Length: 157
Image (cartoon, rainbow, N blue to C red):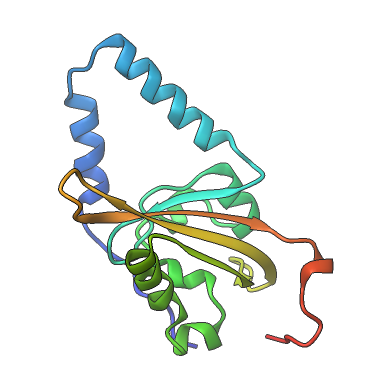
């Protein structure tokens, strides 16, 4: 079984060091910290960010709960690891990112794969993130587990 690539860069360290060394007003720091705590603490939804190539940059408690990976295990890996082998070989992860860029959003219901190899039916939304000039800088991905009653009976992974 082909494994998705792992991106080995200093991006996370650079970002972390930059944030540590930045001088911000107390209000900005407090607001940013509050928002980060909000996202990190949400357990009902997997919320994480991807870089422009689809490598995972951030991870929240909901993502860990649904997918089984600790942040230290998954940050830097390609998000295609959550797709079935069939979906990976058919190019589904790349299509998701391309659609998000071209149409402003990608929405999908389908099988996703946990760290232990088990599968679950999820609803997924991927939104492109752009800088002030409109250049793509990554993606926001939100997913949640669907109840088995929503799973089509004709679909078998």
